[in-house]
Image 1 (spheres, rainbow, N blue to C red):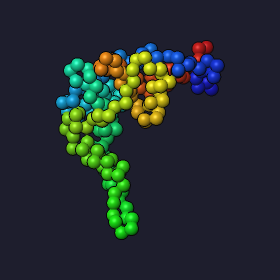
Image 2: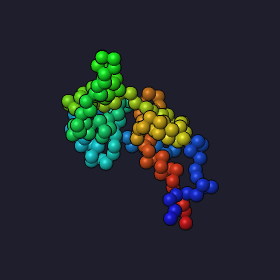
Image 3: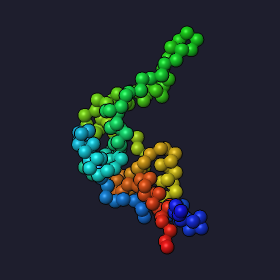
Image 4: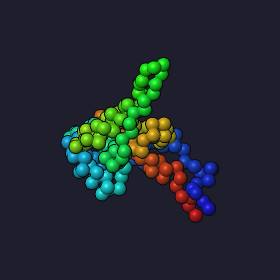
Length: 168
């Protein structure tokens, strides 16, 4: 069974630029769109995330299917602990709860989107983009040039590049 290229044929992800494999047909949404509209766009296009941009294609955030799953999921109540008679909450669990609560009641994309977005540039290497995706646990990187979204690169794009079927 051949799962991809042999080790001698593996492409050099450190030598190929993001611009060579990125998708320039970016599916995006504006910040004032409703959460319902965004969910329909995600579903219709069978994608996991939308780029949120303003009218000049400037990146404002990302709205992922994970952001929207909060609607149907059980909220994670902050972890409470006792230490020397005091009671406190584990800070990461408080932050997560606050975000989930905010998203659960969101009506617009701006209310639900992630604002701190990991990005890359067209001249970055595929290796650098893959490292960012892996380290930051993101599935999609907006590609930014001159402060505008010019494309996106996904984990699937990177995998297609790395594991092209061997030619017969």
